[in-house]
Image (tube, rainbow over the protein chains, first blue to last red):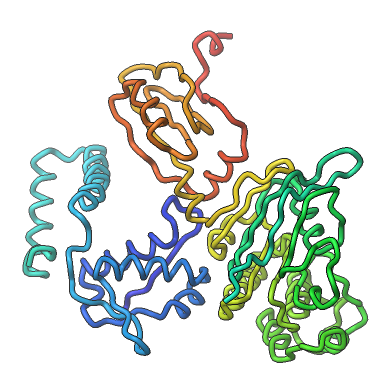
Length: 137
Length: 309
């Protein structure tokens, strides 16, 4: 499994949220599949050099949202793929990404149509790989 | 499980020559926490630690550590507390092993495995002489000597000060390792907010002898927030805003850092009629600096009259 959590200090995003964001992202993109195991709270705390309570906080949030499940004596596993983000949260995350992409593209002098085409092409490729929108299978 | 806080003070005060070093301190450190004690230089952190350890007597106020009155701290209490300072007494002619042997005689509960483990974590050889050790290696030896008696409470006064990044990381790793025992409490002062963000679950902030914050780290982060207000033209002058820490003014934009952002703050901001109002998350360091830095409004744009020669 290639998935590895990386955190940075000094960020605007608290460490527990960096962890939940990365797990959600990995589930959405398929890098983490149902049944994959995550490190224990203690192991991840020592790997990332972070207070175990911070990891426990992140895991509790993920468990509350039904993304992971802790099986006694066996470890922490990815469970069913539910809707990972609420619709509001999803929109809030999408907007800055589009802003950045469009802004950069304008600066690079792409036309309206070129940009539309490039976007369509990407979406087409995504469809081939994943067989459609991952959130609405 | 003992619910009594490991450290507890009420109105703890110490004056030096008519000047307060610590004033009216109400501190509560929960058992099992990793507690970061923050504040600018000279804010009273070291005096507080020395008061708690009974090395300085309070001018007034009360305090207890592990349930013992800090005014009369018995020897058995001291044996349960590990104290790590920069000026740890080490004899230059001793080897690392001799330091351990020497120190172990003072403690009935000496765990040689822990001593060797910590010293090994800092890549020290047992036969090295203290006088030949680098600063980081000395810190590792001091830490080993402090941790081997398995103290219930570890007090560290700016433990990473002057250490290189690798030694710093080893020290922080040791702190994480210590949390394996959930009844161990770590109380440390620091200026390294990156380390604090990693290891601390509680913070206290001392500002010019007075305690301003004492809560879980996450609570502090949530209570200091930044709001960005956009205006079609120059932003209006700021009226009294409840909880305002800092304001930055730029072309068509006001960026305000507020503490305890609540209904009254929001109402006051909405009354300015911005075209857009957005909450912006803020880093721990920025939150800390806006909390302790200069209050009020700052502007990076010279007004037209100022700009003219």
